[in-house]
Image 1 (tube, one colour):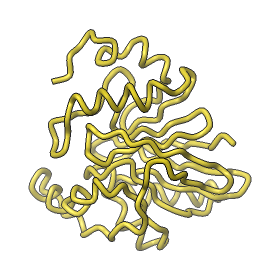
Image 2 (cartoon, rainbow, N blue to C red; image 1 turned 60 degrees about the vertical axis):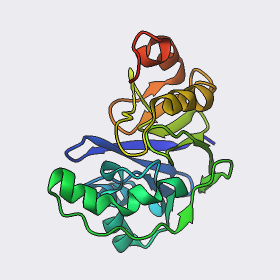
Image 3 (spheres, helix red, strand yellow; image 1 turned 90 degrees about the vertical axis):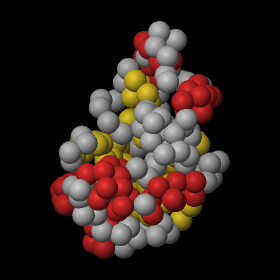
Image 4 (tube, rainbow, N blue to C red; image 1 turned 180 degrees about the vertical axis):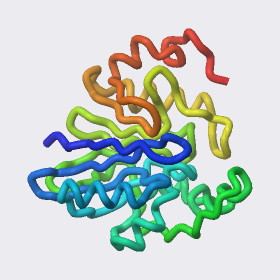
Length: 215
């Protein structure tokens, strides 16, 4: 079953939070709730969807800033890959040091995202693929014809690797082995910028064609 995916671009980083829904069941998850928690909750109400969980593709500040408010408002479980737990726990300190922002302590994750173990919302199932390189615990969530890829790959670009835990060769290997192996028509929903497809990135992304070198 193909999920419904709604993109909510938000905050100073123009981060993409996604509402992923099984419309027939009326169930939804939030993927990477950034800064504007009120916006996300309002959209769920407008769409008449019941939030069941928060799934995190990775734990950088711009993707987790709204987690505490969402948890407080709804009590839903937070899912995160264990390798990104140090980044997650350090998010408030990063906010203060890097941006001068006061981010509240984040609630501990309730569940571990484990590659190979499916995630479900309603009757919709997602395969979890580990795509380290942008961060150690980055994951892609692969559904029927879609993949939510966090900051691993963008339309015409790839994720930065100069942050703690980043590694250029690891990222390119992850993209080639875990994302470019999907069908060309698979729609990729990145953490920033517009959606794209596997085929488009395979043919035109300069970091994947070899036109540019990732350093």
